[in-house]
Image 1 (cartoon, one colour):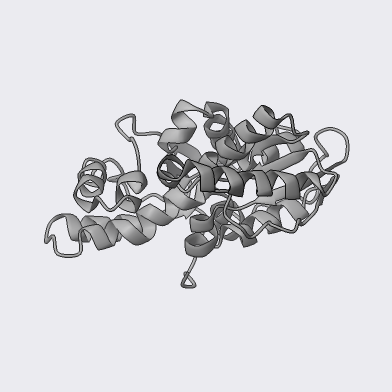
Image 2: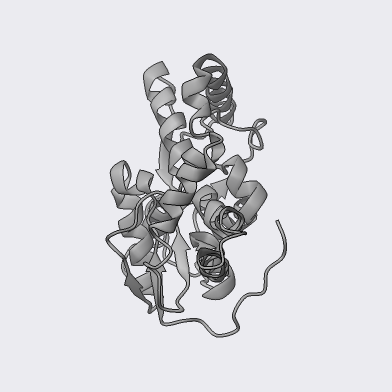
Length: 258
């Protein structure tokens, strides 16, 4: 991940790219992301024609299909506003891989490169652009201890772990506990979990066991694919571990309304 220059002045309007997993499986996380941004004084726009970032096709070795998915959305974010993504892996796909997909396209290429510069993962944007300070927020509920999970792609391409750690550690009443397998993949990996279910299953069970060994009963992550994988495994195996999207966690722990 390369260092990026952040704007010196906060915008007043942004787009939200909700991701297909948020839209289909964890819509509350998308709503809470909007609430976090609106509470900071922003107007949030949601182009209804948006869909998937194309990551499943891309990571499965089908760049043509990924290109078709991305091409259909290049013109949806036409205003020069930041595009906020509540998923580090999807943000990484759009920021780093969309320009590569259209590197030789004289029309789509410039669009993809310009759009990529406006892609921000949610906590990255809150921390570095809005400079949101939750340290003085009234604690939303009783004190709690949590473990944090960052997807492989988000950690590698968008630095999401650092952003998540900074935001969580600033929250009153919250203690973040590191666990032995925190840096390891949860086994989801998009289509990897479908192609190699036995390996994927072993990886996620290691992750759940490591998280539970800390004594924490809540795992927080900014990536829905990981959350679904970890949460469903914990529920299936009867492990005492609940999962929550980071956007919802931040909204809840800062008391919701301003």
